[in-house]
Image (cartoon, rainbow, N blue to C red; front, side, top):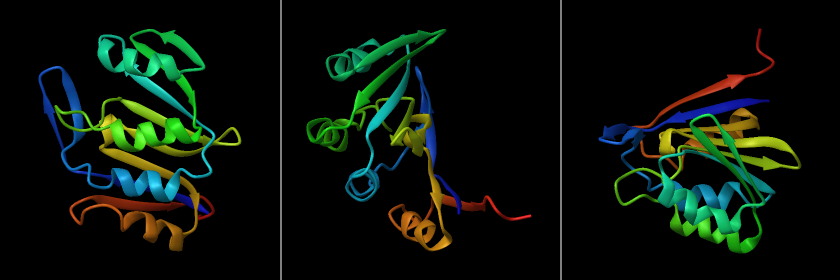
Length: 149
């Protein structure tokens, strides 16, 4: 078992660091890889008030950690559909800086830098290849076998 890391092409604009320029993978990612996910932990910069306020009614916990606001949201079907259909930022990339998706308390998927870096944890090479296939060909991918010497 190992981890697969996908890095998509990214860019930056004033007020938003590196983010994915192509988010066409997003609905496939949610449809194929979140059905067993119980909750998502989202980190946003505190100054991103609008996107934080959008999540607050869904959050079961909200914590301030320095410059970051951390929200935990249970992934019931309504919240899963919200994230699937409402996560793309009109300015580019995803609305949230980082997302950690957990299954039974175990981190399974990490989406960082507004969607420009995605890590799927605890998969074999065959599953890693399937995961890579939902991204555009220009994405950079790596598989790290946790058992390799």
